[in-house]
Image 1 (cartoon, rainbow, N blue to C red):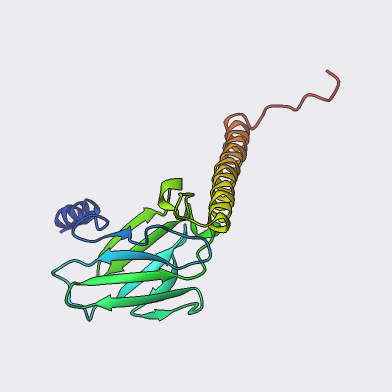
Image 2 (cartoon, rainbow, N blue to C red):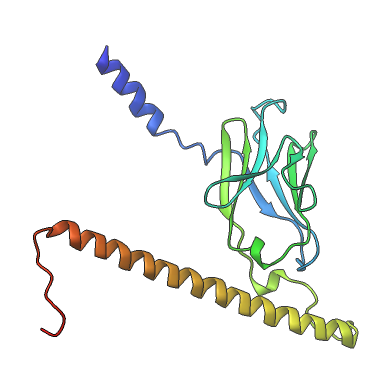
Length: 187
């Protein structure tokens, strides 16, 4: 009996629910801070639309929207196109804190998790001869802010990674040689 149970458990471990026919992508082009940003999730064709649909965010998969009901309606909303089987998450008042975060689209047992990373080309208001002088100035300021925020997110992540590795190294060294005596300062 245990032999069959271990085979079943082994098979379950190799099922990858993050792959398959479900995925999301950014559809708002160009993106603008302060505006709405839309992520479009293409739902699998085999799961009934009456099954649970949800959008989550972050490391701990905080639920943003479940079956059209938002946890914060001023920030998030979902629309569902049943004929095309597309769920659209709208992030209102899009700002830099919405970037470099994992977003998950889940439908039934299928899910797709990916980072919302954007390059400067994804943002609008790039200065062109057709834009007014005010729009050109706002575009340049927006690009500078985006670049600075990208650097800040990268560096704060790097600093956090270094702190984490340093702490792990300290813990590993203390576990490896628990009998090691501390040398007094000055020696």
